Length: 161
Image 1 (cartoon, helix red, strand yellow):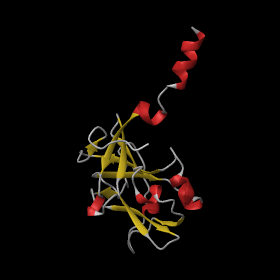
Image 2 (spheres, rainbow, N blue to C red):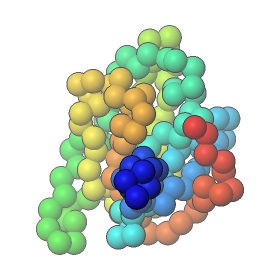
Image 3 (cartoon, rainbow, N blue to C red):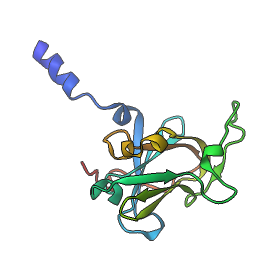
Image 4 (cartoon, helix red, strand yellow):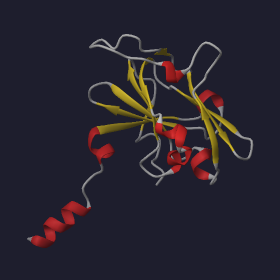
């Protein structure tokens, strides 16, 4: 009996596997292998992350900086949400850029929203320590309340462990 209890806890699903549904957007903006993962909670909140197949996570690159300044008038850091109806949230389209990630080798990657919705918050911790994006289970970037689905479910896009 004790062996069964110990085995069950070892196989327990992670927090993400338990409470979120994984969706994938492959080749965002037509760029090969620049895949994004959308974690959808039952309350319609999505967390935008990089998929395991993204070149930033595959090739052992070093992240130099992360820039939330999208244009002269738009910064994702200036997003201020308040109240029950999330007033002040920035509206996003499927192709809206969320941030730009610069690598030490000169490559630059743009993380897109992948879903139409409102931006709730950004992960400001990655500004101080950008390398946490590459750590397993810690690559969450944005929280978005979305309006509709236009993404692939995990059974159509294999999980890459």
